[in-house]
Image (cartoon, rainbow, N blue to C red; front, side):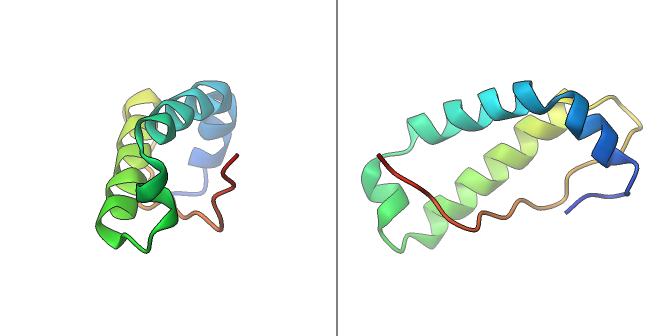
Length: 75
């Protein structure tokens, strides 16, 4: 969820960097964190992804307010 619809184009420009940040955050999580119904850890992961994404966006362009995951695929 974004603060404004114009932010979509900025996110698209930064998508490779955002993905890299997401992978780094997820690699730091343990298998237990991702597979158990651990709401606290899942919220920390969502907040970390949101915060790291906002750090990559230009000042004044808007912010990501909330991150949603539909599923985790674990190999």
